[in-house]
Length: 473
Length: 140
View (tube, each protein chain N blue to C red):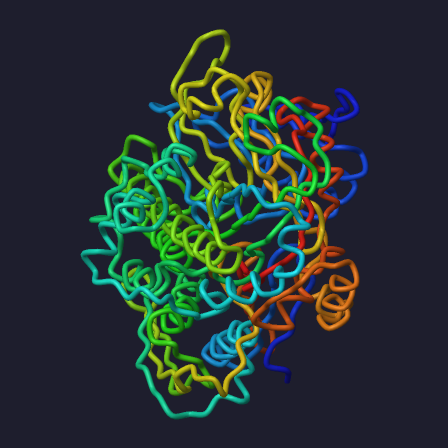
């Protein structure tokens, strides 16, 4: 396999064999070495072979091996010739990140940060198999899936303004919960308003450095040490079930002959099954938006109780990391609507795009990139260049570099907790195993990931934030 | 013979489950999957669920069978201890599996270790030499 170096941060695998388009990888030589160790590049080439793929199959700087599509993969498909693939979205549909700002500084909360974290831990159910406090009927669950964060706001969770500051305004209108399987609904009912486990987390953070004063100001970030809250979770068992259901339905309908990898199973976008998947996936996306909306509301309640006020706790933004949607992009000089798959990638639209809220339209959308446990996270701003270079996409996080098994062998949860505490970071969690698995040393260097995004221009640095309190499922 | 072993994988968990029969290998794959979420050895056998899975081929049958564990955890809080009386039959254009899951409902006495999001086809293989080996990658 030939990997052509275009410049310091751009590499290309030229079109060969069955590939319909080339593959472009935005990565540093350091990160590329780690990516070469697994199947990431093979998977990206497989994506480049899919029907109706447009221009280039892109790989983001934090990429790692996925199933079917790589994590950190971005691909666009022609609406008439192209396909839609559950494997191009992933099992955790609309796994994403929400960021809240506050008017508090690290000094203001210092004495009460332990209490804040303890109270949040009590309010927000987390961990494996942990059900929520809100038990819903089937009909209400379906309403949640049809209206997303709007449902949550209508039912007293958060503010109207939050919706404008959410990708898709917190609701994918194509959603049709009627296509959800009985099982997806059953798994969703106990899990609304829960954080889940694995890499999902909730962090109280402080601003560590501001790189772009104007961008930061527009996003509501004013000074070093300002406190923010980041929520990272997804659509839980409901989304996982939708992915599994449609992989099975598509296999049964179209067979698996000729697929280099079974997880690449797909359906023509315009086919009934392709449409049903899109409508079900959108329902799962909405479930995740409602989920983060509820969790954000509880966080505000805790701040109001512990600190005396939650005023100024506006939402900066809420972004999806795993999603397929229809967007207009310029391809071969012509504007065209395509079906974008972002799997482990963040939309990164620049100034002027109608999809982003008016308040941000002059600078570009906020891009929220969580780091690994105990490390920095970043706020970037979307760019015009990204629309040309990556269908308006950039990285989504640090990306794993070491298996969970290996992390468990190497790290001890107790030691990690002590290390974090010695650096002034409080930690609340449901199990020691998860703490060891999510050790920051098991992840790629998030600083390097965002540096590549910034240098390539697909997402520009605005601010760096560091945790003061971490809650893990 | 070992029931299962875990192999190296960057982001997810990859295991091989072994068995003298296909049924035994499938049952051990269920234990390997469970082992990522709880210590199945410590789960009492108090609750029983009948399991039925179908598949167009053995791989799909395996995915659908293992998905039952995730479904029962999310909807019933069920923790698996063992799979009994499994039978796999070829039928028309595919396979059908019947078995019984034995275990207990989640309570504070059990410690949950981690989550499994889904069973994937990635690097899946079902092979037979002098015994059966099924290899599975699960998304965690």
